[in-house]
Length: 269
Image 1 (cartoon, rainbow, N blue to C red):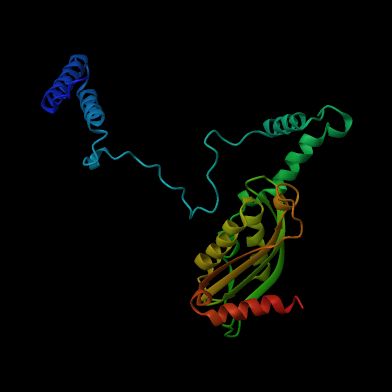
Image 2 (image 1 turned 90 degrees about the horizontal axis):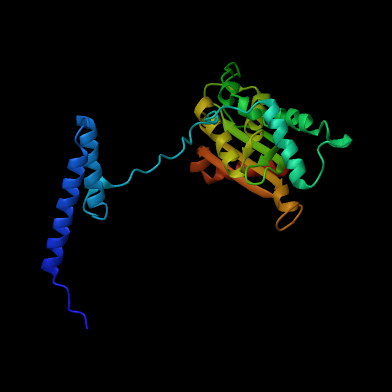
C-alpha cells in the first residue's frame, strides 16, 4: 500500500518548485529591457495564478461584441476581392457542383453572376439613414399615423445564401414632418439587398426610422417565404414567417398595435 502523502511536504515542494521557476526566469531576463522584464514577471504571475479564482486581475480578456448599431458592415480586413477573383470563385463552385465551367452554356456564367450580385447585394453600398434625412414639414398639421403597406422585397438568407421574399408594412406617427413615401420602400431595399435574417432586417428598418425621423412611434411588420425552407431541409413550400417591431406608442399602447394590424389586414380580404 502507498503511504498517504504529507500535505506539509507537498506544499513545501510546490513552493520550492515555484522558487525554481522564478530563478529560471530571472536567469533568462539578463539582457532584457525593463519593459521585457515587466512582461516576463506578469507572465509568470499569470501562469502561477491562472487557476486561482480569487485573482480578478487574471480574468481572461473577452472579445468585444460586434457593433450592433453599425448598419453597414466594415470592409473585410484583407480588402474587397477583385471582380476577377469573384468570377474565379464562381467557376470553383460550378466545378464543385459537378459541371464544366468551360462548356458553352457556362462560359459567361461567372461574369453574369458577379454582375447580378452587384445588384442583389447593392444594399451594402446604400446609406439607409440618408434616405430619410429630407422631411416635408408643410403637411397642414397632419399628426396621425402614416402607413405604407405591401412593399415587396427580395433578400437572401445569410445561412444558406438562398432567397427569401415577401412584403413589408411600415407605419409611423410623424413629429417633425413626413418623409417621402418612396423613401420608406428604399429603406426596405437597403436592408433587404444584403445577406440577412428576417428578424434582423425587421429591427434594422425600425431602428433607422426611429433614430432618423424620431416619430412618436413606429411599427414594422414583415411577412416572407424562405426558399431555404421550401427548396432544402424540411422542404415545406408556401410557409409564411411574420416578424414585427413596435416602438414608441406602438410598443406602449396595445390598441395602437391592433389598429396597425387592422390596417394591414383589411386589404387582405
